[in-house]
Image (cartoon, rainbow, N blue to C red; front, side):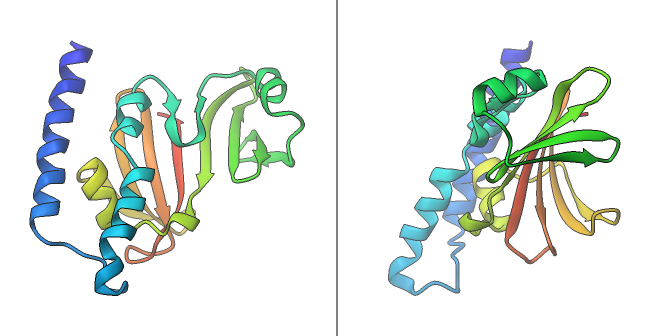
Length: 174
């Protein structure tokens, strides 16, 4: 059943991606001759693998899986650049990647990645992943969120405003 769901979602996204390309959407802030280069670089960063693998808890852009024990994360990545507490849990930061740990289980329940250097927009997400399941202002964090529901997980993108570039991407348990 899960395989059928993934195949079905893949077909829908392929259709949506094709429609986005056919509509002639472009990045108007880039000179005309460079638009296809910028677009192909963005598309190569964000891929539908993020959704397909996200159903299993694998966070493709960070090459990490949710549910890892703190000790395992430290074994793999070494001592974190920063560690502390966030919303009742712990976090470990390695460069642009942050693991959020449930203090009761000692395992990762979310991973966040700073992707601001890729300068992605809402349109880039829609081209690569389809329309988000939810798009709204998170008043607690004051970020605009784009959410893709993945059964037991959520793939979430955050921007300062609806029109701003995407700053962070998260994979988190529901």
